[in-house]
Length: 464
Image (cartoon, rainbow, N blue to C red):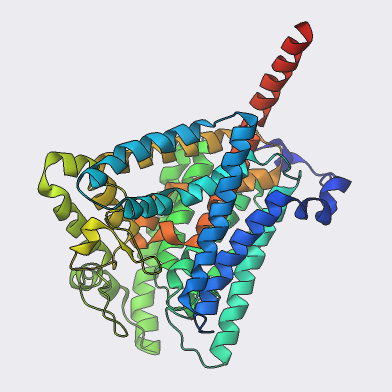
């Protein structure tokens, strides 16, 4: 099936149910308030620390709010006597990757903190999965909220620029000093939703708005990777579109057309724009020496003494570290060995002896903590998630639910890139939105099965 049924419908969309339109009815519910507290904490506590100069202790509000949500989720599971399989997976992974550091003398607190950093956002998704009161049009509301949030962040950027903050890593909306990582990951998440909306509806105006917003925000904080990332996401979107429609042969036609366009554009750019406007030739951005100097740098930042090692060096250094023996290569040093908390005074056992401190990416950290086997498990879980989302996106008749599914597919496909590019697993606002969307969508996927089981239990009780 190349398209969902709603793509053929010429009549206006069905009127939103009255219950769904009455926002206070569900926004006053406990589950929504808990998630809203988490999002508010993720969005605004960094801004309180910088530039408003509140003590860094206020960042603990994020952990407390998330812990409260997780506590409520487990309390619900105990009350209903229902343990989702995701909890069993987390328990198994915890058992495998927590034993080694504890045996080798790492403190229980450091291991617990590493576990919390690894699983707190998936557990937030588990809470979203367990929510029973999702309104019928939540997918539409969530999509619009994400776009509105990006607009809000860009407005904050412009205000900061107007009052004298320079363009750079700290011009990142409400994400505080050097909050470019948080901002960039939010941008890419919203871009994937925009591309997902195009896959679901072929509506181009919203996609164009999202791309322009992302370009503006990324320009204000000098994120050079934005165009590359969007290009890769667009290519993946095209592949998903062709596979969905059974038009894989056309993929080669698109590749030839893109190659031809590049062959025409590059000479024109280098012969005209470079000479008339003084721009750098494109080939300078592709020089091996320039790329290696950027990716494998091991220098310190200009404003601090923390090593900001290059993304390539982060991976190669991590790989060298786990070559101690085969067990370490396969399973890493264990959970929490490269984690730290300045507020709690916690520092993992491997991190204590590391010459580069915390200046590494999530991928570099994970290679050392969970090894090759852990990374393979992560990829397998992502493939399973993508498969489930793809089947749901092709069958749902709601365009906004399909938007979320396709957007999540695209973002999940690029987890290796996000992990290599940044400390993506700690990008709180994006991670909260991503896992809430995952939990909500999987709630929709498994809802029919839960209703059948409940109906069977009721029939059995009546017979008894």
